[in-house]
Length: 311
Figure: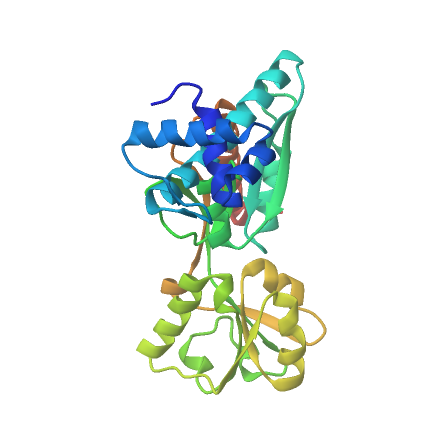
């Protein structure tokens, strides 16, 4: 492998993005012959062409796409390594980039923010929100250190730990006959108007709902799609629809004539995971995960015991 690999990676990334050696050189502030030489060194080292080029255009070959995909991650972590070293020398704050699925249990986020790590007193968390499939992509691409995701797609490159499991909730009008029951079954939703999250938000979860309905021969009269749970409020109130939502979303719309009941379908339970890249060996990340798992485990035991405690 070539020495000073980061500069070779930067050249390959720039060429892949600009599809022009001159523009790539300008982007990373080196000369065009330097970029050409760096790419040549890489290709000779690998024994394969990364880019096809002639006088008119540059195209990225399959090997180039594969190399650039991993190179982006390596460059990102190289930059973070420098930042971490500088922060340590200056006793400055340490940053972790953490993502979360929309409308996960707020308790998990408040627990995350409450953590104090004795070895990293200056830890700061930068939190962002994305759909689960996007969170996995960001973890694998190196854009996130950690994510709290609902039903994330599986990958051999991920480390995953389940931290919560809860049912779907069905929102309905308080006048609906279903409101007389403590739980709702899927069979009871047949021939109803459904309000359901858009498939693009979480394709595997959406497909699981529809496949189970098909298997059980439970057909909705009509389906209306939404992006956020709050959008379900008006259809439920005005059109006698029933809406599928997660627990936190149910709490947001259960008001002014709308009530919710858990959906009694074990195969449709929502599992929330803590996920990180399998190759991420960050000490601060490991310490944070251990503290987080320990705290939610202890709080889970308290929640299990609390109903047995007399007032």
